[in-house]
Length: 290
Image (cartoon, rainbow, N blue to C red):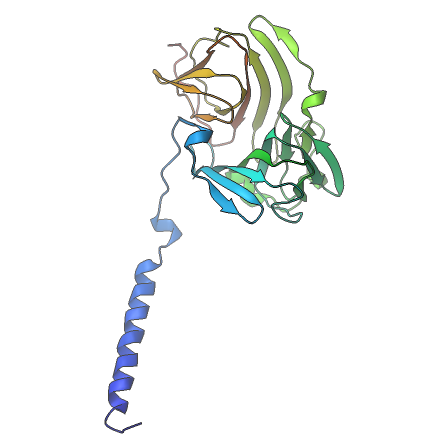
């Protein structure tokens, strides 16, 4: 290299290094300086979600934010091709539940397997080994929810090791084994109502609502809640605003927000209702309805 050019090259490298260092500094954001916006009550329709192809099928992201009750609440919809699994059996501290919309899955849970069909709900406790495999001839579509609470960071063992009979550990709720109990407005299938390792309460049920009826007057409660549509059409009212939703829709009701549902059309509507509370859940607001 010409001796006259060497200083210019060294100077250029020096300037480039400064530029890269400045860029890296600008792009690095301390976790303590960024506060994510809390998830507010809302409706997420399956047909409005952006489809992202994956190696095993498709994925639709729904939300991934903190809530009033949770440090982080995420949801996505996976469509899994026949014979595929999203990942090998794995474990994580956050609790997770899955609602199977369509197709057939083989559930791997702590070394055991079980086949389930549409309408089944899977709950994976903290640090329990789990995965799913599409064992059907057609794609399987399911909704995935992950919950992170303050207690999640204190969990060091698997749920299977420490949960007591009065707590919810990993479980499979097979649709075919859920007994429908008649009620005035339709049917109800009970799932569970227990504390978990990271939630003070986790309650779930499945309601089948007859045409033109409401499950109750618009109301509110401190526990946060999601409604996942299985079949039929509902008008969902949140804080006085109404939206119409069909199968696969996810509705989130934040703590103490007014909400209610009503069946639309001439056929029943069936939906999952899941409520959860943690040590961070607020107290109840003034009790009255809209």
